[in-house]
Image (cartoon, helix red, strand yellow):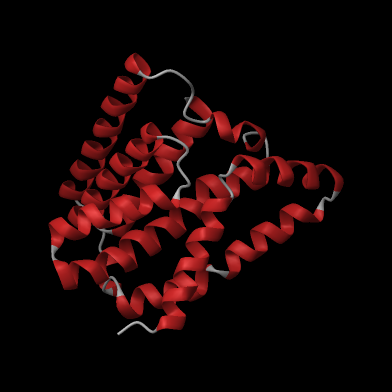
Length: 205
């Protein structure tokens, strides 16, 4: 059974990861980066320092270690392609019916190496580890697949500090897709999909 201190670490880690996406924090960080070159190094170091404890918790309470080491096969590739198609269709719907850019709050991070490391590499990795590899697995053992799917998608949506009902829906639907892909094909495929989606949203949307 996961302890209160380990659960607290998970909560703090998730909050720290998601606060990077808050507008005022991005603006503050951008100003600090301009005036202090070590700011980038500090932020990335803190995030990397959270990786090992997160891995420990995931492999102790969450996914089975062998599950994430299984080689790619035709079914996993099909699941990955299916996930990409679902996101493409959803982005197409957003483009047709929703105004604004999905990456509007990330503009000052787009040309930053720190932004790339955090938003394209570390953030998807940590989110898949903690949301799917740990929390979803714990919920799934206790409440079953359907309840856990809805619950983890709601937690993920709220953790991304949404600013409107539309953004809540965006993050909820994205988490639904990531979680289904994780459940069907494992951590590696969900991570590949998450990285691909972040690259598209941040640099191509």
